[in-house]
Length: 115
Length: 111
Image (tube, rainbow over all chains, first blue to last red; front, side, top):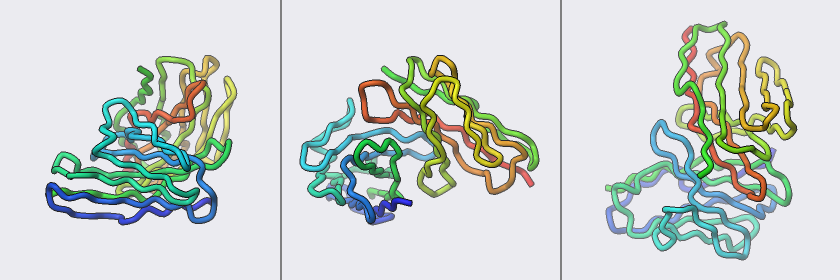
């Protein structure tokens, strides 16, 4: 099956610093990547959708200047949490799909802790 | 806005008992997917339902899509401890490429 690799799997950072999370599709070209946020014991909340070569589409209530998304190639999308604060601590997960295929494959997730 | 609700929120069953989780959308769905997330893990795709009234089976798992394409269910027969996890439905609406995840049902199986 298709593999999506997310890195890092966990990160601890100081308040006010920025953190970059990478999402790579290893064996397929991901035309679309999705970024989700999941709080403990809660559902996945879609943050934004990125299509290769174009600007990401953010969901209502998600600050685009705080959560920078770049989808520069068909195999890589990055999410940068800028000026992180403790309330940004969460589990961030990406998923990717290709072409008209509706099945999305998820990365392993990144647990971010801001101290 | 579009919402996808799931019930129950939690379910504890004895090993060998059956389990069902229900997914409901406020508006008609284009299609629906089901995922399983183990504790500490990421969601894993189980199945996609597209047609009205569709029923699909995967071993002990039976998935149904309602006639009105507003609800869906996942039924597990004779649960095993390996079935532990949170089951999410994710609905796609016509005219959009994104999926809205349901609230999830956390299943615990007691040996």
